[in-house]
Image 1 (tube, rainbow, N blue to C red):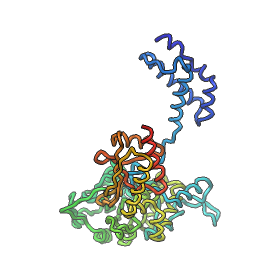
Image 2: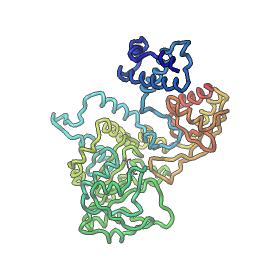
Image 3: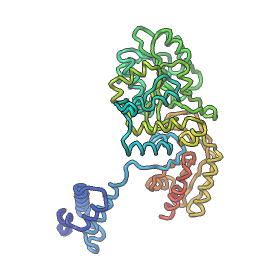
Image 4: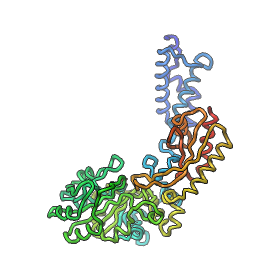
Length: 469
Ligand SMILES: *Cc1c(COP(=O)(O)O)cnc(C)c1O
């Protein structure tokens, strides 16, 4: 093998090659990075030679050609976008792994405009002096929530942390055992409470908590009663929890803060469409809760954010807390949130403009038409697939509405010789990435989450895969 190793050109020779310069000119990488890829390639090549694998082309094309072909592949891989768009064929609308809510076109345009330019993020234009980012969209937030005051932080987990730290540090917070939830493995009410320095006082049992459980637990040490929306699971059967109104009466009587973590917090009446039983944010505020928080990118359909709304003195205290600076959001989030909230002026604009709300409320018949169109088009292009349109259900996702199964139609797809897992892997390797679900050894696409403008790419994706084989 020694004679092959001896024939390998040194790095500094390769760096002088015209091909080295060409890669530098064609790709957005530095000379240092390219040299590193060359070194890696040479290391691998030496190893392969030592293992008796002499690469094809060693003699015919010249080893430099082979090396640079391989290096170019490495560079291509490196320069690909890490964060990339995905066609979501799972039907799960708030797919946490796939980025939850898609933003409205209006929101995206506003983000681009604000990002590209200077803005009045912390500037009072009329007065010509310094302002606060907390004031930028507070009027909109007050309008949609019905609260006296509101603010925005990084996400709802941050909101929970801020509320507990600012209002209950070293004091007690009463929570029902039925509401000590864990969401997505990384957010646990009990852990966040511990981090915030508030002391958790658990009351009731997993399935039943009564008003008297709360009454007995309230003491001099109590700062807060906290209600947590059990977003991602259901307790069924012999269960009981205390109504918000009863807790409001109790907290008024004992002079403690009542905080409700709504999780998703919907501003749209999904129940009127027969979907779920999410509490409406306005109703919760109207019932007298002191402070609430909810996510911006769950049912609201906006950017990742945590919205806090409630009594003026409480929100004021939160805005002034040191953590508010730590947890603050940037101008792009405000821009996206502003336009998302503006879509809530009417039911029509909400369902027309916000992809999340539109997808959750889509009629099954509409989805069926899309599935049939896909099936017809694909089978017109290739005979590699067998496609069956089937009734199925989709999930809302994002830890919201766990008991809701939205009626939908899926295309169950069978490839002539690829297994479902092989086909799904090829779809994931496609650009744009196509994520599907596998059911009964079939690749299934649920069209609830496929936008009209993605249909062409989706069909092309399937059809190029069939041709490659
Ligand atoms: C989702 C959720 C959270 C966390 O919200 P993020 O915006 O994801 O940080 C907190 N509490 C409840 C009840 C939730 O459902």
